[in-house]
Length: 399
Image (tube, rainbow, N blue to C red; front, side, top):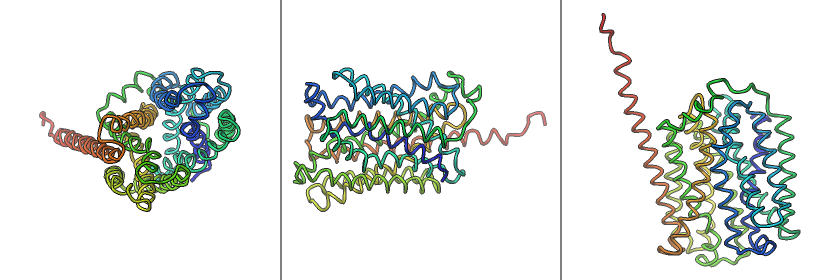
């Protein structure tokens, strides 16, 4: 794999840290800024919604930019956003800074996916996407625990100062290693032409598949700590080491999903959704035993991220041509929309439904809905192909 690909991985690492590290610093933020823990928790939702909003806004204004210029600009936005977080004097300034930082998220991963696939041979495109996303998985294993420790030891602002430095380093390696490219062609630069990709039925069904799959992931993951402590019986101190097992599963599943998708994309996408549903449903029983619970957490991480490269590659294929970068960015936004909806769904199950012990069971049903959408997309694609086939061989009436 070319070095430029690992420059994208560095940027993904920084973005992954800033997205998830706030989960471990809610108590520190709420105490320092004088807000409730639930209000501090909204900084997570605000970031996710910023990712969703950032994809169309930046896509509409950056269509004529070269991809390297756009990637570097996004890292500048990311760095300034984290600097603003570190300096935020109050809660609402911090929220605005988090949303600003989130604007870079979808476009970086979206455009980065297109750049990554262009750096490698055709039979390694999904693996290239997976390697870029490895930065996100490593952020969960190393960056988030270290950032949490740093924030607890030296104040939550120190974490955002550290992420600001990561942003500067990522900007430098992208500038140095990612090859120059020409600005987009006219048909790709035209905003209307690029947005037209979102009217394609296969692209929309691909985005819906992504949303539904990650509703299931975050319906369970958001509440993994209370599940482990209140149901499985682990102490609070045991949660962080167990989440390292989850992070290890993320790395394995991410790379495995990319390799399998390079060989057979559609079976890998469908199989990863089946595996995700099966693991979540099995967790409903496994969380009542400590050994089985730890094993299930690792499998959950692997199954969750095994879906990422196939789903991203699926949308890229359906958006072939003008607007591919925008569609890719929208798919990243779809992951985060699933995150936000999933957290809400899990909360409803706990407060108004069967309760905490049933969160994984409900979460396991949602990927089955994603699987149904994927099958519908394939069936419609096959039907459209059959309709076009006779026309292609129809004899000329004039003969």
